[in-house]
Image: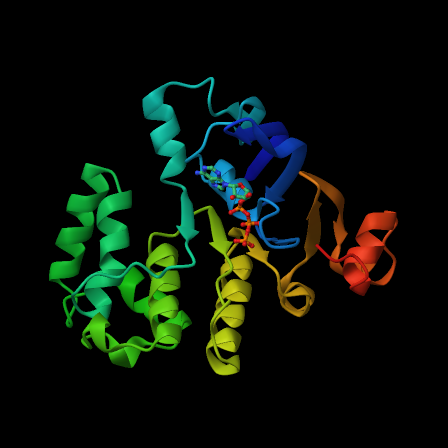
Length: 255
Ligand SMILES: Nc1ncnc2c1ncn2[C@@H]1O[C@H](COP(=O)(O)OP(=O)(O)OP(=O)(O)O)[C@@H](O)[C@H]1O
């Protein structure tokens, strides 16, 4: 699996947010996108999620130019992508139902019927994918708990499980731990590693450089509407080649 933004540009109301930016994620790697607040990290994830069309440049999924393809092909590709937003976005039902919801909306009708049939034969009534995803985020024992009673950190973990449950090829995470305590942060970071080890390509936007160092195989630094530097995590942090990157990482560059 390869998801690639190639020379993409995007402006909102005449203001350029991304300008000729390129970024690639492959299956089985974690790419962290770091950069100051408001630089365009969320916008880049929305482009990679195929929610947003670039004004210029292309987004390619396994070599297919997504916006040149037909609507149905684009929808099929979108189903292979999971996105976790800053807001967990759970609805008023049990933890397990919230995770299952990911399966329902993402799968094609035929898969959905198969999933419903399989779910009938499971002792607790939930598909195996739901159980596995809840186990990855450490909430299998909370499956019947109402989502309304969860802490913010637990809700974010459920949101992650929902994206993981339908086994996407790519997982896009927007500041997945921004308001979380260390324990919940550690669970999410372990789940990121687990997703990577399953062969999923993960892109995580974060303003937490330490998190990038902990979880990422590669880091892309977003500055001034473009990637100033992209490479193996250690190389970017220990030996940045771009002068702006160096300043940003050392904290000299204040936005
Ligand atoms: N739908 C929109 N319409 C107009 N402007 C937008 C829209 N979405 C984002 N922007 C602007 O684009 C710029 C980049 O926003 P974006 O949310 O991508 O940044 P970010 O790096 O994710 O920021 P943060 O780290 O604070 O979440 C900001 O100036 C923002 O105000």
